[in-house]
Length: 484
Image (cartoon, rainbow, N blue to C red):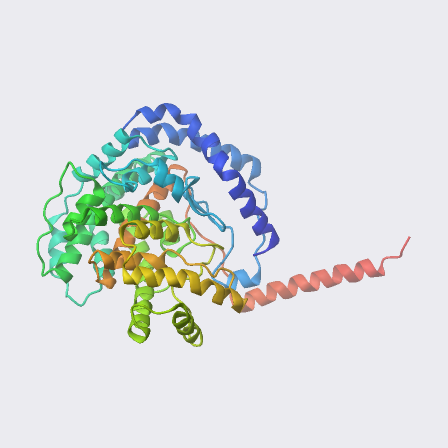
């Protein structure tokens, strides 16, 4: 990463903890007494619009970094090119949701009665408002999602008639797409609603979509893996994750808590990853939330994004088949070295992080508490000890530590969800929380159509040649200038 970019990231990360709260949350402390999320946003948005407008007026022409040829050819890695409000990824601390670490979210966000993990409803409130919600505010979100959870019959009919060979993510994306028949934003735009009100209809679609995702996912799961048995009705007195777990067919209270944790920690990972960036891009065309999230799910379905936890499980399963369920550290070391001869060790390393992913750490803590003697978890623990030193010795790997995908599949397997093809659907249900919270703010702040400039290789070569020629001429002129 160029020096200017690294300096910018350090500056942002060093000030985020204070600026997020001082610049935004404290201005709006009165709204914490309101349980209606839309009304809270109605209070927050004008103040944030004013703050952003003042910042842009003062700094519109301020450069924030440089772009190299390597960055352009390297998937735009490390280019500072997006405004994404809901989360920021720190290379050393991991993800921060509106300035809060995962550990802080676990400590501060409300829980269900008898539960030990934060409710995703509270995380969504935090992402949308930058405020830690009260229990009453979280309960309001739960009721709102339960009231909006009904699935249109045409969507149910479509899901029930998909071929069994169709991947769960393909079904999930298709169902989300056709939900846009009832998009409130699409109708409002067609009716020429004023631009300052766009966010209101994005909010309505977002709440509707989040409410329906667990039922859609559960129908897909039961059709594919439970002989098409009915998902049952939403219990209006239970939280979003509890209802999701029950519709899937799991009633273990620890699985419910695992689902709460899973849906919370997978919800957002700043704006540059494939699913978040896709939703941001498609949404910038004023596509409604259904179309935008469906596009994000298609990106999430790619093997380089959402399928990583599945690849970890497959790799560990092959490890067990070859060296057994209770391998020694030395056996694991040799298996890792053999793997590295032809490929990579899945679940280790991250494009941004430079330490153990805190999403991995919180899942490890869950496992230590609830399944410490599980053989697969023990292998995951051994890998945590054995793999990083090996990768560190290679030298070229900037982050030898485990990421979130190194752990999540083992936890789901322990509680009986062994259908690996479905894991990305769970990821998708969670990721919708982050991208939709951001979409509300993208429209509230009037973000324009995303349209970066592209180069052909010939064009890029010509640009560099022109600059090198100009630099050489400048140097020659300086050399020819008579010395005083």
